[in-house]
Length: 612
Image (tube, rainbow, N blue to C red; front, side, top):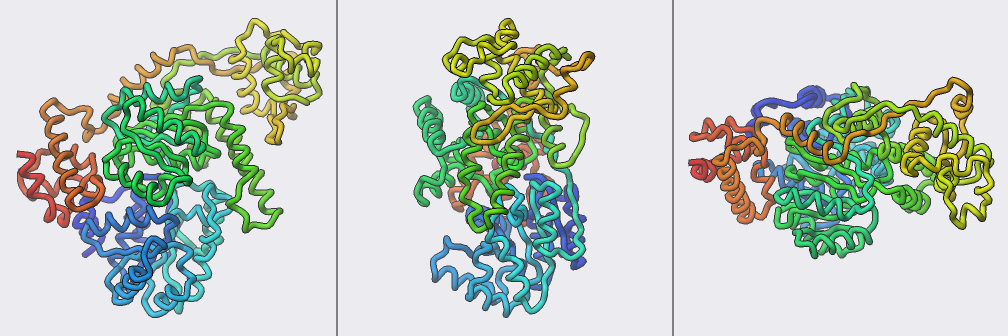
């Protein structure tokens, strides 16, 4: 079979997306490849299809057990023999899988990087034809990446031991230029084709809320999304426990996931979410990598992640089916302190020498600063993320909380001068709270102890709301007129640009919101409805809505029979397309996106009967 026949027969698609075909062709020509593609863009097809066309075995290096199980389960369900080799197997299961692999039963084998250099696996690898090594989540190989894993450095040791160098391909969703260059160097890719398809996920709505009552905001959100499945990310295990417990008390069907739970409970809770037994999971960042559940309609962050890479990867678990989904970050200034503690006490890089650890720590603090700026910028949120990864757009996407809020240009020069003057007159010794309280004329013990009530700028902005002073201070940080250090005690410092503001004629303009949150949300809802795709169930008639629910019920029944997640049977997008097309024959059913010949033979007749 050629690549198009494989795409249709096993995966149910008629055409390739974006750069999939170019990456596949490059691999089939025997060339090394690096694909940087956003979550949901179909990276796995780029190495799975060549694996089915090449002589020999493709090894897929994967960082997490859950990722391997999910991928192998999907392949087996599509009629492709695949296996994984990791610590979740018993000794007997592991040797049995190796034996089957040695007989050529599996064209694709997923393996943990730690396994590559073990004696048993090397004995196997030296006596079979390894056609390709595909490195998934390739950013893990770089110490500048957000998920650096020293075990990934063993990949090259393994390849060098093979009698013949295989094709090496690498794929990731989040990589800055530095990480991309690191991947090429460390994996020693030979003149690789490098394709970056763009980081934009235009089906995702991005929002930031500085809510005083974060739990209340999330509860209200869930009240209006009762039918949807989603993930709520928290910074700490304690937050996961608290949020999960409160949601259960408030009547929501929800489960939890964090590293403090037993392996058995984590597996059970993850399965309950994936198999749609529980629609919502509250989790730390330990959850999600490699989870292919494509019906996640929202990802909410109960707190700010430590960098843009992590945020975009976690948020990107929403809307993998291409349908509209929402990513909302509920931010508090306390999140900065929490993340700084994580960075200072990071135990993940213990294998690095002290000098390198210090460099990584400073890099992490700089990335935290960029993440903080995301939370209080008034510019397009999507454009902010894309610029971080080296892409530049129009600074208006029409599908983020900032673009759907009306702003007005305001002259904040006097506030800016007061801020810079206060920092200078206090000899750059204090943090943001002390500076703001001084300007606002606060009568607190701290202000008196520091004698800031004697500062010439004390009370100068008493009639300006404290939140507005903070907004301007944040703006001055982003524009590098002021600097807030990332030491144990964060201090506001002057910069080379500070003097420009104090000079006569220097003017500072910034965008300030003039529309209420309720109006912005109504505008976003109107705009989102306009952007809905033709497969979206939100555009269904009442009859089609009922048909969609019938198909979902049948899918759940089949999933329970076969003990697989429902989305592995068919995605929501495929079911929605069935409701639009209403196929009556095999030929018409094969025209539905996501229905291939193998799956039609397994399920097609049952779904055709359901559609009658």
